[in-house]
Amino acid sequence: MTETAFATPATEATQAWRNHTAKFTVHWGRAGAVVAADGEIDAANAGPFADYARRCADCCEWLILDLSELTFIGTVGFTALQSISARCTTARTRLMVIPSPAVTSVLKICDPQSRLPLVASLADALAYVQKSGRPLRAVT
Image 1 (cartoon, rainbow, N blue to C red):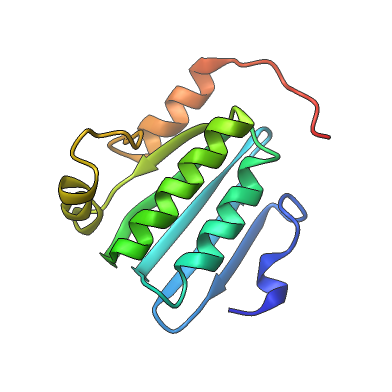
Image 2 (image 1 turned 30 degrees about the vertical axis):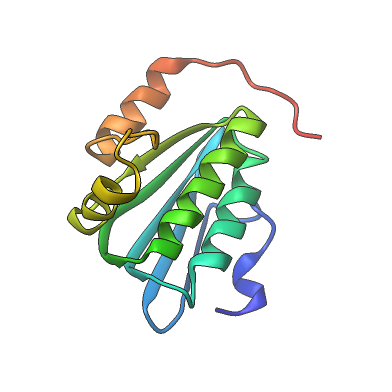
């Protein structure tokens, strides 16, 4: 991944970047973002993925991680998800994670208490966002 791939969040409506094992796409909405990953989250890309998602959390009311197309996620990817979740909590950003079967398998082992907020589909996550009606907050 290149440095230019990680532009400041919300500078464009849609951004995409890739490395040798994954493609990442960010779709910006009025008050949040959908970060989608396709391929594999491994040691080569988990850090930059987590860094970017945490930066998104700082300027969003909600953040959806669409991992439904992931074919592999290592334990370092789970650690990345935990750090994103922690940042969302600190920033008071509503996090929703859409897992793939690969993600679900890792979560059964690494997150048996089901602490990550999972949703079944992007449609379900977006429906929740539309119903939540949280007021806008200033970004400082």
